[in-house]
Length: 366
Image (tube, rainbow, N blue to C red; front, side):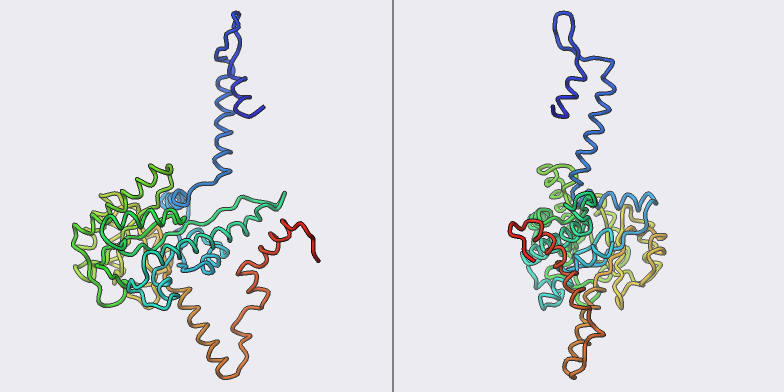
């Protein structure tokens, strides 16, 4: 007998005329069992990435968890590294995606290329989650949990309608959130010269379109599936600090989930932003950039819920590769610069692959 049929039989009784009616004495027990069953069923399927991110941010807001640290990834390997290192979330950086494609972050990389990168990142996060959970390994198995990722959506790649398509695309790829900014296309890194932004009203409408797309996606696919909207403004440099604050407030008014005031130039500006703008806020910890680099604890005290490290992994890898190339050019050994072959194989997934291969093998080999 199935679980629902058991509940049905428990909650009904027969009268003298053989009519089936609700049994009041078992009603409370019936609903208690049903509720418990529902919870187990829900937990067995986990929750959508946007809902997982929302829950993480709520824990930070409630003071139950430290600020959310977001080492930024840009491909499947860096996504795996972030997840396997034990972080709760990550961010797909447009600078990094552009860089590994051989371009500067000036929107030379198209929407489709960014969408492909998002899918690759999602696959990397999923594979890491399955490895960490020991999925399918009998009594030692635990439930896999893929950490959520916020993806860089740049300007949305066109008008408001393009923005909505971008949100839908990133949602389908498995992203938990999407950042939409108010720069004029083609946009560029927020810490370099030459930026310009769209008008105040156009910026707000762009963010409103993203929020509408989030809600429409949820209407189609269920509560908690629409990616959270991170609304970014770059107007501090072009139009002044007060304009940037007003834009963030307006973004919240039209429904964005999080805000990001890019490139504040002092601790005082960071504090003022946190005091005046509601909701979760992102601090961009770009080493050697325009914003002061502060410890996570201090950022959280200010009122930040997230701290992104956009170029740390990319910059560290470039440095290591340049040093290794120099050693090769000079005919010197590189062993001090690299992992063992066994460690490299493990990081890229060979260990898990071998286990999976053995699990499904029909012809056992030595």
